[in-house]
Image (cartoon, rainbow, N blue to C red):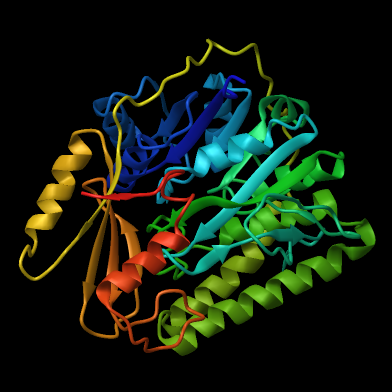
Length: 411
């Protein structure tokens, strides 16, 4: 069976170096039939073109829904996958998502998003209610599962790790431009689920999300602006809540977000005067969101062109181990192997008990760092008696089928 054609859509604004890293990772995906569509500000568009990407849309407005719709309008895939510019997908991400769309009943799918340490889960299986509140869904194992609705809670996808059939996007008018930031993908995935489209949760479809700095928040996720969050909440409530619940939804949102800001103040990440300003901004933003009128949805024409099959010839999945004798030369070796077209993982484990971290480097290889005796998965003991080789074998088993469909070979 021929691979399903997929368009990967990346929106980027004022984060050109993060975009470069994201696109480098996308270039290592192992699905046999996909294209990449980049929607970016001038500097980001320049990066994408310099890397050889053909479908690049210039766009420099702070509205992610409009930007994504622009990317959708240029896409040719039967399925459209989305990943953020401050995120990187594991090499098998797209292939795992693609597999579930062999079932024609599946309309949308998403996987696991990992946080900044590359190990802990940031977003797993989730449902959302009409007030926009998320609720974790209990999912076990690594096989794809149908994420069904439960009562008034519907499957929620996350914009940095989701895929939707092109026809479903057309049928539902794409992303609602009133959601310039926050709840944009939630609104769309909820509408699709309410209409009866099956949602799949794919545990092995993994994306690492670094949460880069933006106009709305710092790299550590400290908020800079909250008016747009509040405005989007107002639109969401009016769109999905029964009128009798509008006041309750508004009050609940403002109280939750006020507590969130006060929490930042207590931790010292927000000064009291800044927290007070942002609390005022919440009410102002919510009021402004209530004035936003519905606009015409996305209209899709026929796909521009067919996506050909393309397989990377001679690519190998390799790993290297940093030791005292090799020192930092191992990183230069890894960089050279990547430039030769391989996918590379480097283990840099020291004789201590530091926590493990995983990152995709700007040079295009995966780097696992930490202590030989330290905790990797956060449910593990703080100290583990083991050798370097034992820890590497454990990690290779954990990422089997994720970093590569085949076993990694030692270079």
